Image 1 (tube, rainbow, N blue to C red):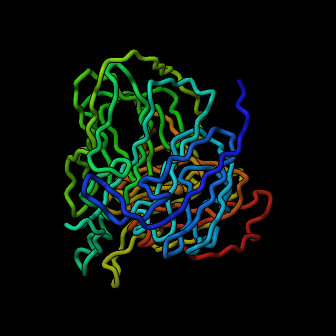
Image 2: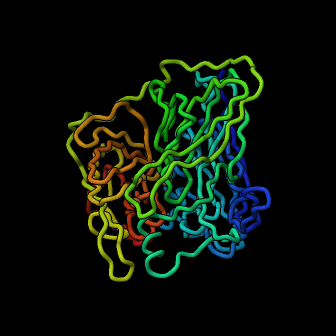
Image 3: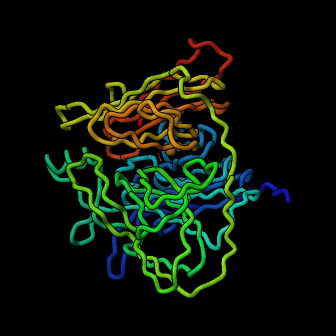
Length: 441
Ligand code: C2O
Ligand code: CU
Ligand code: CU
């Protein structure tokens, strides 16, 4: 059966509101439609989504559609659109090119706006997909840094401020779908598809489901080639993963936890629980997970010649203690790329901490990490750079000309300079014709 392409309309209103993260624990949140996360937006491949965004905040905002291969003018960054001013409305409109687990978030003053709750999931389904599960859940991972009265703290003077800039903002209020310690109900004997999205400012979420094995079936850009069975997986800020969880036994109580992951921060990482899975009555299962999920054609071989080198590093700053650098500079204007010209980027991290590299509007394949080919092929838009590591990614700019960006998805690092804008230009024109120089973040 062929799916008839449809137009799906949504209204999102950004505002400040009171939100209960737990019974009796209320915060003053910023978000969409008075909830954290925003309502999940859903469509099918080929559908056109029209999202009217009204800004009822006291400051400007935009929305970035993380992972969606949409036109540059819809990307929601400061170089492609005027921020939506208080009281104004902007209409985002784009076709959904790929199935997968995506998300959206504000792309103005992110260290404040996203920390307070301005994000939501965007799920694109492919009616032809063969994966069948008994149920599906979306889990948006976040944390908030609150004081004893549940107010968002402001980083204090000097060391606390430098620490937050260095580590990224990480708090001890752990949230799944805007709630502290929620109960997740499942039926014994069933298997579910859980779509995890790490929407936190800086926290590395090292998923662990009571030690039970689960299958990874998808990453940022949709399905893998075949499922991979693991019992833990790291999800850095911005990344997504689709897993098949279960079957569990009736009466079981299982924690969804994050194991400790040392990303070389001042703050020591520890194992922490985010939610409890409560297993109810046994039910029959209709789950079908094919061994072959899809074919992912390789974009390039491991030894493909490098077309661009990018260095992530940290340097001293008189004003802020430290700067977060791309090729030794902050807030960079990088060279353009030509549509249709295969990109092989060598990205190195010479700093002593991890950085999740994110490319807007495109998927890439990691073809090498520290000299070795990765264990499996996947479409990614966010990939963790381990300290001292070098990766090679391949991606193909298509005809969506215009301004794009890449940056570290630890929001405080992005803000501190670890970002670059670049333009995708018409491949048939020569190099001198571009003149687009911008300096905004
Ligand atoms: Cu989700 Cu510019 O990022
Ligand atoms: Cu993005
Ligand atoms: Cu970083």
